[in-house]
Amino acid sequence: MADIRSARGDELSAPDLYALLRLRVEVFVVEQRCPYQELDGLDLLGSTRHLWLSGGEEIAGCLRILAEQDGVLRVGRVCASAAARGSGAGAKLMAAALETIGDAESVLGAQTYAKGFYARYGYVPEGDEYDEDGIPHMSMRRRPPES
Image (cartoon, rainbow, N blue to C red; front, side):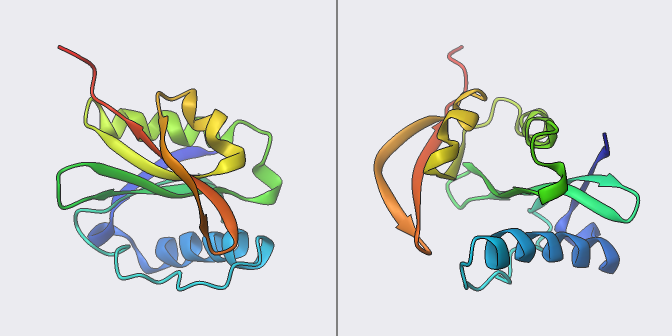
């Protein structure tokens, strides 16, 4: 399987940024037929951390971690290429995300069908299901361990 790569937004090379955006558009906009503004101004921030599985020229999967105003970290844009699905790519990405996050509190907006996947990493649903771009989602939170 591909190796995990990591970079802050202000460290990304143009080819890496292009490959990340291409995969996200391929998955979220084209495959899931969700026309939305993928370029949200957050990818190049120094506080944004990108993780991706790189194997040659193709990226097998990626995610990003954002620092929210309240200090909570937000995991988002989690996706795998069609060819990488079922290979453990998502699990490898989430394990790397948790290494990056450590004991910090984190949240994510899971597509409802995937809430069981995120629950394996300590994320607990909170609130009601909501619609985002025509796809049911659920807010999920992972709290720091009790000391």
